[in-house]
Image: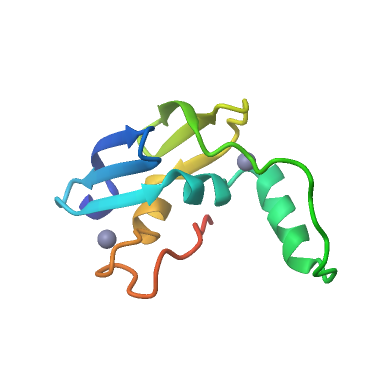
Length: 120
Ligand SMILES: [Zn+2]
Ligand SMILES: [Zn+2]
């Protein structure tokens, strides 16, 4: 794994709703927790997003509350990824460091704004 996709330090500011990452090459990234939850890479969420993208009924409204974007816990998965547990109990998404780094929302990495998280 290259230096740039290895993290030095993760800080999750739950009050601000932001996760700060300092990478081994000293690059700093800030990810909104809402973005992390919205890009949850687990199979269930990916399927939900795929179905939503295919929906053509533009007037479809949902009365269910949006998924929780508050983090209850986080843990490393091996040496390559981080997994979050959200306060609504969801915790299946594993975020590889390399995918997080590629989706860094800073202007140097992605001048057009945060891209979706791409796994695979
Ligand atoms: Zn998920
Ligand atoms: Zn960046």
